Image 1 (spheres, rainbow, N blue to C red):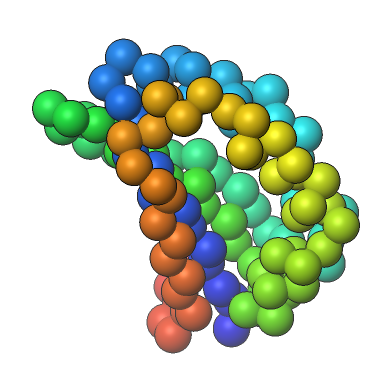
Image 2: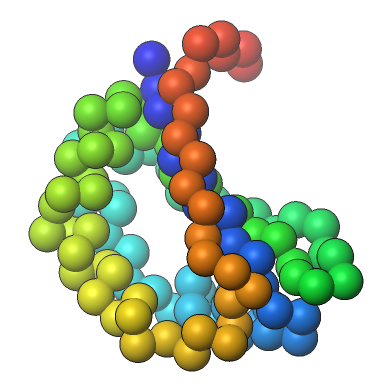
Length: 105
């Protein structure tokens, strides 16, 4: 069954464009990994203290996702994460992983 990996990001009000630019300009190497199916960056509701975003990746299996997290491509694509302006974020990202148990198309 497939696996969905999501990171939820709370973004400081007024910094949404900065956050979106980071993602638009990133070097994605996801397509290089076996089992990668799809990536989406989702924009959610805006609250008084943050805007909610979620990165969504679909993998053929949990093992494929775990292989991504230990890959050279993962390390390379995250190498500048610590150098970013932290004021963009209203808190740390929150990871959520889901195994598909029912799938309808």
